[in-house]
Amino acid sequence: MIKFLVLDVDGTLTDGKIYMSNNGELFKAFDVKDGCGIKDILPTLGITPIIITARESKILENRCFELNIEELYQNTSHKLETLKNVIEKYNNEQKTNYTLENVAYMGDDRNDIPVMQEIKKQNGSIGCPSNAIKEVLELADYVSEKTGGNGAVRDFIEYLEKNR
Image (cartoon, rainbow, N blue to C red):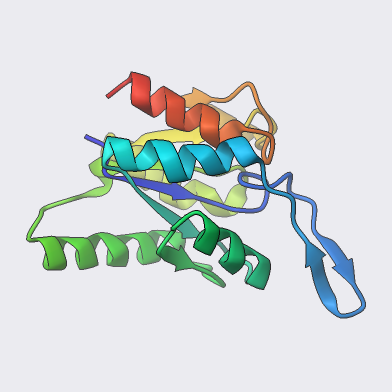
């Protein structure tokens, strides 16, 4: 049973483009259908969204607030370690015994591969956008027909819903 949906941001929740000005990051574009899937569908499935990303962005903080995502981990180079700590936190707080088997993960690039490999070893679920790198496409249980930032996350959520 999937309890957590872990998402990468750039290239998964966004199109992977980073728009910058002289003062830093200017904006990111998010798909409203992804947001609806996260905010409206995941709670009905009892799935907690978790964002783990290597970058840091106030824009992302604002989007997570809009979507009621409480588990946001930015500037994280060790995604697997962060995820294991989050699962341990839930296990301690809720007196549960969740493992990586209870995780669905969606990412698109090299820094997602180590955590994807571990989740796959424990029979969790791996998804990716259609424009993910080749190595991620080969690891995925589900490859969305949509690209990152264009409804791929919503597509994966619907896949999880159908395959409960």
